[in-house]
Image (cartoon, rainbow, N blue to C red; front, top):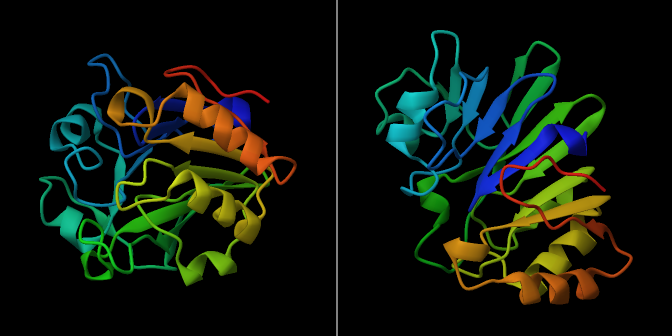
Length: 211
């Protein structure tokens, strides 16, 4: 399943099989094709880009988000609350809570979401912008996409603890590079701290992942 995932920079990903799904598209090229679905985790501009949603949306594209996002975009959307799910043929998308218990950027009241995409017998967990939360104990994905910039999200130490909790096989960090303070040297530290808990895959922008 890894080979069907691309990191597009910051918190944006593309899943290519068996359905084409964008997650939080931001600064997507103008020649990008219309996906089957667009998942939006929360209403911050770098995750909910109305310009990218407009550019990507085709007549059959399904937009999945929370109520705050739905109120800000022009397109009809499927609104999910935490733990609700939808199916897209052979793909299931479940909304997972994403918030910071004590922070100001991602409060619980804003209804931020992560997503579990279940396809081809794999569960992909996109954490959204979140700190460590108790709800993570309920999920055990194969692949975890985690924010590690500590901007009211996970620090590197937090992300290691999340891996201990959810026990994925593969981990892909995001919110690093040009988008923040976390750089390649920090990723190598992260990989060392994770050790044998999981395989850390350091993504390259617009390239498919591989282990």
